[in-house]
Length: 111
Length: 113
Image 1 (cartoon, rainbow over the protein chains, first blue to last red):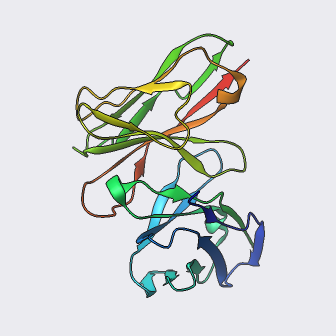
Image 2 (cartoon, rainbow over the protein chains, first blue to last red):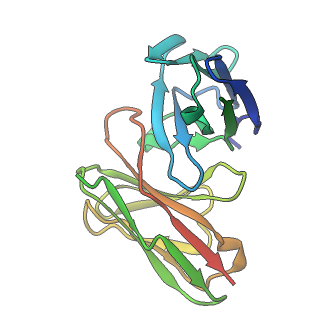
Image 3 (cartoon, chains in turn red, cyan):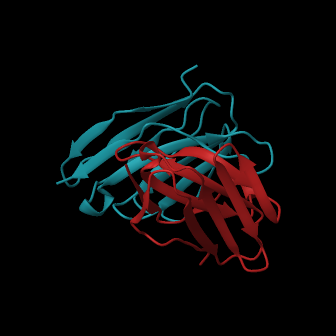
């Protein structure tokens, strides 16, 4: 069973702080990883992708990948109340772009 | 540019009824997917398609069928609805570029009573 695991949270951080979201995966052959943001009652929205070990930055978001430890993380700097959502981690080998999703971490950013 | 369009947004079915969830994309993506999302759970892949006329099962295909007659359309058919199929259904599409992320539709919230 190929799995992607996330802590369900909720993770609460004050406005302006750094939010750190984590994800582990079981399939060592996984090559591609994604972070999606999902507001309550809405569909997931792609915010970051990462394929190589190390860090990838895009604005306030930084994705980190460590294939040896089978670990993916997402850092959100200067967190805003509008960042409050569930964050889904997805990964897989990329065959036909099929990916496995974690159950999501709920983030609450308090003003 | 509409992206991925799903209909209906909400539906209540009685046990044993059938229905088709519609999905259309206008991005000329070859890859299309159907996922279901149960409360507090991740998305589970039901079926996927890599092009017109080509479909395959995902993790949870039982109770569902799909077809793909055109690049744009990928309907999901529920036969003999059961309470276990109460869920939110998302259609998604993806470019054939290596490991490209998904564009999701807005979802269909289905309740089977």
